[in-house]
Image (cartoon, rainbow, N blue to C red; front, top):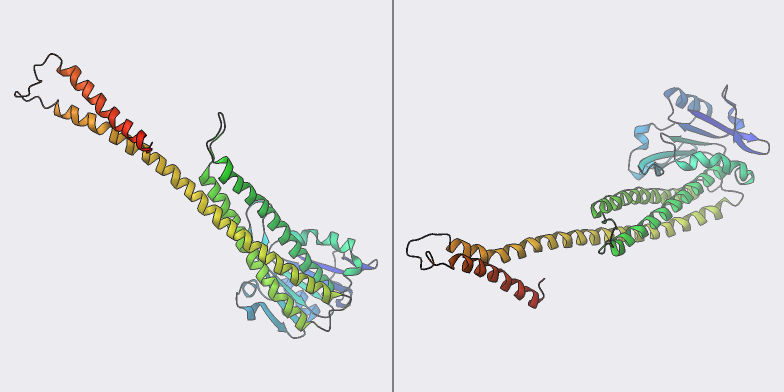
Length: 325
C-alpha cells in the first residue's frame, strides 16, 4: 500500500487515491507492505533507491545509516503488537531529502496509526519533509515512554505479588501462581529487549540526521532533535532500571519457589524420620523366631504397639524442642 501526503489547506494532509501526484506536490510517501510495483513507482518519481525488506533487516550500522545520492537512509527498530501482549520487533526505514520523506515498513506500529491526527493538530510544525520526520521520531519516542510506563506499573504489581500476596493466604484466598508470575516477567523482559534495541537505533539516527541534514533542519528542528536526544538518554536509564528490577523479581520468585519445594521436602523428610523407629520395632517383632522371648508373651502385641508409638513421639518431641519443626 502506498499513501501520499502533500500540502492541503495550509498544512500536510493525506492526498486522495488515484493517479500518482507530481513529485512537487508530495511531502511524505508512506509505503506499507509495498509491492515491487509500489517501489518502482516511488523510485521513478523521486529518483531514489528504495531498500528491500532483506536490506532493511541487516544489523550492521553501515547498512542502517547511509547516504543514497542526495537522500539520507535511516533504519530503526520499533515495537509492534504491544496492545495484544505479543510484542514483536519491526523495522522502519526513513529516506529523507530536503523536499521529500519516504517511509518503508512491513508492520503497522501505533505511531503511524495516530500520526494523521498529529498532522491535523499541528500543521505548522510539519510543513517540510524534515519536520515530518522529526515529528515521527517524536511519536516513536512518546510511544516508547508510554510502554515503559506500562511496564513499570506491571512490575509494581509483580513486586506486590511476590512480597505481599505470596505470603500465607488468608482463609478463602487463592494461592499465588509463581510459575505464571515467572512467565509474566519473561514477557516483560522480551518487551524491554525490543525497546532497548529501539532506543539504541533511534539514538544513532539523531546524530546522523543532525550531521547529514544540517542545512535542511530549519524552523526550530535542531532544538527539537536535541530534546529528543535528551529524552532518549533518560528513557535508556529508565529502561535499565526496569531491566534490573525484572532480574531481581525473577530471582526472588525463583527463591520463593525453592522455599516452597524445600518445605515440601522437609515434610517428607520429617515423616520418614518419625516413621523410621516404629518401622524398626515392627521389623524386629515381625521376625517370628522361636527363640524370641516375647513370642508367647501375653502382652507382647500391646507392648510392641506402645514401643512403636513412643519411638515416634520421642523424635517428634526432640525436633520441636530443637526448633526444627
